Length: 183
Image 1 (cartoon, rainbow, N blue to C red):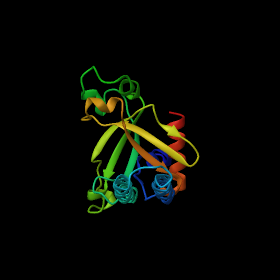
Image 2: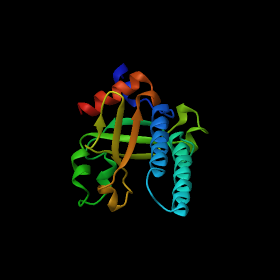
Image 3: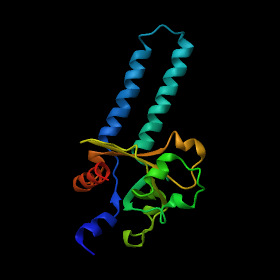
Image 4: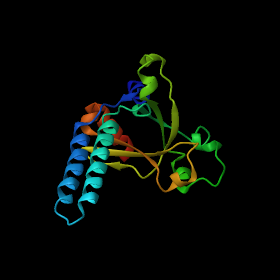
């Protein structure tokens, strides 16, 4: 195997992103500040403040990747129609998944099992298809993907893996961006 194919098969580990945390908290604080500029009854203001603070706490929990189903590692794989996880689904699958069958696949590892097993023994917990709706930029990339057991409404609201530049190794981030941009 060449070095390039070895790199493409390696797990890419994700870290909590500080940029994502700051942006999330700034959005909550901005909404809280705007709440005091509008004229609403005090009881409604108190309820909205409690909801905003609860949302901010939940955002920090999810952004810091503390929940058991947080994606902590992934790898992109080349797939064809026969080996696609979507190939076992009936023919009325979405057009996005059908066009993605010859493209990229994604394998995911979640926090609850990544901690317990050494990297050499790690197998994918979830395997899906990367959809063509990915966004690629210098500091942020989002990977839209679909899993074989996703419900029908996921056709319009696909799963998205956000990648911030500070939450991933720089070289891995570059390789992912290039692979998504030129696939």
